[in-house]
Image (tube, rainbow, N blue to C red; front, top):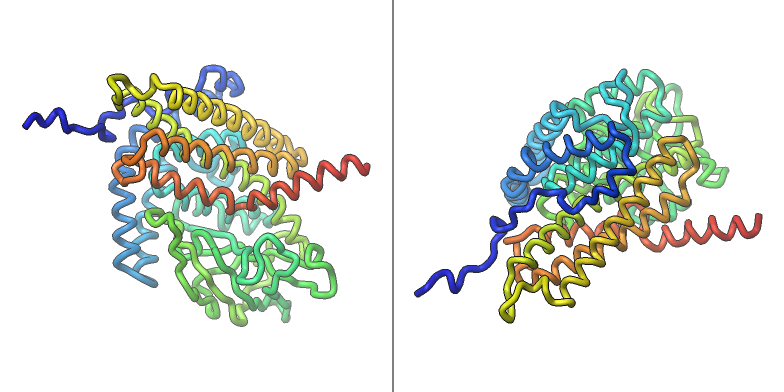
Length: 427
C-alpha cells in the first residue's frame, strides 16, 4: 500500500513562525521601544513556550484527573510558580508595575503586547499569570498602602505568591448591588462572612482580593469595601473545585466560603466603602489585557488555519483557492487587525489616566465577538481534523467562548455602552 496516498496533514506540517500575520502597518502604532518588546516577547514565546505547551497541557490534565484537594493544589502550584519564574527571568512579568516593586513600569500597552505574544504560544500557564498579576494585584498597586504594595507585589512578580479576585457569589454575578458577603469591624479586626464562586485561580492563590458590604445602610455601590484575604486563614473553606470545559489549564476555579474570618484592619484595600470604585478601576485594566490575550489565541487559530488551507488539497487544488475559504480568511484577518487597534487605543487611554469605562466596554464587546467568530471560522477551515486534539483549535475554541462571559458578559457590555451613549444625549 502507498502510505503517501493516505497521509494527512499534521501540526508538524504547520511551519510558519508564529506572528507572521501581524502586519507591518500594525507595528507603526507602537513606539520603537514597544516594537522591540513585541519582537522580544514573540521570540521568547515561540522558542521557549510553544514547544513545551503540549506537554504542559497533558501534565495539567493528568493532575486534575488524578488528584483533589491539597495534593492537587500543591502539584499545580509547583508547576505554576516554575512557569512564572521562567517568565520573570525573561523579563516578561511586571510591565504594569514600577521598578521599585520589581516591575519594569512599561505600562498597559506594553502589557497588552506581551499578553498577545504569550497567549499565541498556547501554553496553559498563561491563565494563572494573567489572573494573579492583573485581577488580583493591580488594585493593590493603585489603591494599596505602601506596606501592602511592598508586602505583595514583589513576591508575585517573582512567582512566589499567587493571587485571585473574589466578586461573584452564588446569587450575584453582574448585579454586584445584591452582594451578600459582609465585613464588620470589631476592634482592630475585620470579620468576614459570605461565599464567593467562580474564583478563577482561587484554588492556587495565597491571597484573594475579596469584595464585601461594609455599610448596609447605604446603596451597595457606596457601602462596599475591598479586602486582602489569606486563603489559608482559619474560617476560609473551599467548598468545591469547579472544573470548566477548559480542562487543561491552571486556573483551578473554586467556590469558597468565609465563616467569621477575622483579618487585621490593615487588610482593607483602598478607602472604606470605596470598593465599588476599586472594582470598576480593576475591570477596565482586566478587560483590555484579557482582550489582547484572547486576540493572541485567535491569531494562533487564524495562522494555523491559513497555512493549513495552503496544504490541504481537495478537487485537485489547495482549499485556499476556493473563495469559500479565501474570503473567510480575509474576514478573519480583517477582524483581528481591527480588534488589535481597538485594544491598543483603550490601553493608551488607561495608561494616560483617562476615563475609559465606555472604551473598555466597546473593546471587550467587539473583541469577544471577533475572537469567537475567528476561532469558529478557523475550525470550519480545518473541518473534522480541527475538532480533534491533533490541532490546538478545539482548545482555543473553548477558551474563546469564555470571553463572552468572563470580565463582563456581552449583554453587560452592551448595557454599559448604551448607558454612556444615552447619558451624552441627555447631557
